[in-house]
Length: 488
Image (spheres, rainbow, N blue to C red):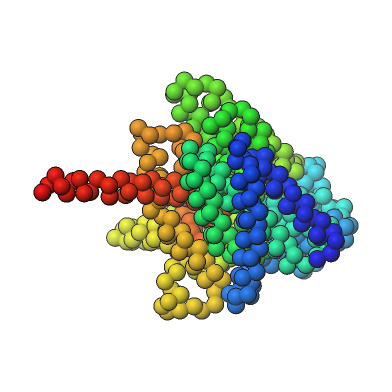
């Protein structure tokens, strides 16, 4: 690690640490900083341990894509020409594959996007591969890599551009974002009304969670996305609970989430809209207006990010973007299916229901539920045994997840009861439900790596539900001798 890389590492630690301190409630800031420090050390240890395993040495498609895409962007910032094929730039490759249609649609258009395309494509119709991406070609990063979720790619590109380090150094920087997970679980539990003791238990679960180390050990976006998503969730709960003070921060994290995991951004808007309707029904106009301001501001600010992606889009559904997005969607689905060594023939729930005979419809739902709750199945490590796939690194995390399930389900049950409904709790459940539905419909399940970005919220629920179950069991044991004495 060179001096520039060391300085950037320190800058990231300071930024995340400062946010952990700022976001923590008054009186809990010291504990939040301790949790961040312990989380950072624990994440570094987990990364080191996971990288000693043979499963870690299996090359991940997403890791390769992030590495090459980020290096291409860094080279582009340095003014060098980049080959779309060599650096797996799926967006530019998709544009080239649809070049005839795109050329026809852009023939009479003077939009910036079409002008850039004509300049890039030039006389390349006779070539057998996409033209080089040069400094004068002002494509947005979404058009280049074929995805609107480009936050992590930009983050890696900054490392390569500013420090000229290997990807192994960037991987260890994932520990900084993972170090925030215990702080997020602790803060979310407090925002849900838990006691300090229960909130610390939630932070402890996130601290020992092996899943964070599993995703952080590769060049994958999940740790950064979890940091952004859980900061967003934490601020949403604080806004509903405390008022206007946290609305600017909520808008900021929502905008970042829109370029990190757009589905979670939409889920947050849906949950906020539902709770705003609830506030209107309860005649709480100020609370409803806070959420309305957040939703409008978040959509506007995220639109600033996306304006560069869709600028000059005069061709509507038949535009150049239709080809890019269609291609990117296929790539995204494929990489999601193979990224962790899962079955690459797995389809979404809707596709499975369409393909299944009527008699097997119930079985499709059962399989989806089982996969969501328990996959990848950790008992496979015992029989038939380990075979060296990357998904095996998630077995320890699944064991902790299964242990937490009773507490999670009990907390959810208590939260949805009308007599105990709390809008803070309701927002979180709606957000998690939106992600569950999105992943289930798209991939047939919400498990393993897909769920990592929401684990701190689940650990908060597990601590709250587990504590309540423990208290009820303790009260029952106290009452049991009295009940037995009455019967005798």
